[in-house]
Image (cartoon, rainbow, N blue to C red; front, top):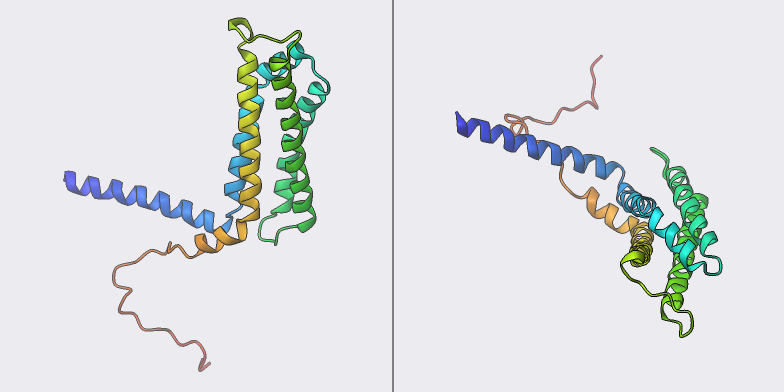
Length: 192
């Protein structure tokens, strides 16, 4: 009895994995979309640390970099979904626009990190990070991770044709007992 229950649970897990792989075969672009979502969530959930860092350092264009990063993180979703419409080929114009947005996101994040580093390492009027200003370290780490995740998203988009072919080769069909001895049905010569 317990052995049957274990077999059923094993089949249930395998079926969930099989269904996931079938969905992934149909839309492999879900992989870079997930990394884009993770990057956006990580950035937006730490927005208070980033805003506090902008207010404390008050470097040139830090507020604009923060605004552009948040705006284009949201717009990248819209462009991504327009680039990969269901059951259609990828829209090349939208892919180009998405690539430009990802490059802009990386650029503004690098500018933001540069402002933090210059404010904490300059000789005169240096900002010292202590317990009350630990949010600066958090913001620097978050923005650095955001750059990495956006870079990974861009890399996944560039290599999408390669790994989508590999994903499509994964066998997801179900073997049904008794079907191995079935003969092929000939539908060419229909006697109607």
